[in-house]
Image (cartoon, rainbow, N blue to C red; front, side, top):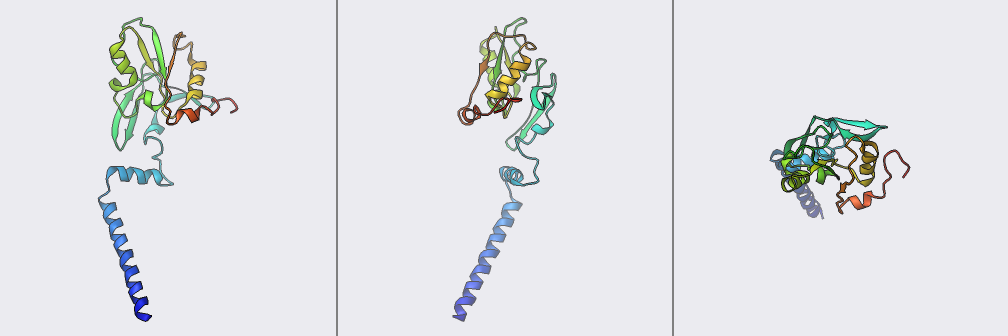
Length: 190
């Protein structure tokens, strides 16, 4: 019985030492994705969201996001990408190519997919549409982390400011936006 207890204790200590060695090796040779994930899981972390959205310049009304500051730049960084998104004079993300003067405005509303998290200004949905339809000005009003209720809030407060367009295009991602439809609009009871 004594031999069994000694052998069990040696095995347990060996297992713990082995696990500590593996943990040390993983920490010393950590990949960027692992470092990012560990930062996100830390209770003291500021790595929530996309890692950079806390410094974005925007305007709010009644404590609710209203629009990005016209002419500003926002750092969009994550362990997979690091770029700058440019905000145009109408407080939407810059669309490339620039439309013809006087082109009718067609606002595109949505979340991070429309905004174009992780892609350059010329790679967003709005820019891709602008390449094919040069007679329209596609206004990228995508805002990461938003849903239809926030988009309607933006429109109620900005419709006249963006030229009172007669149509809008809303993008809904079924992965998360359908559940967000049940959230109340900013400034209203849910």
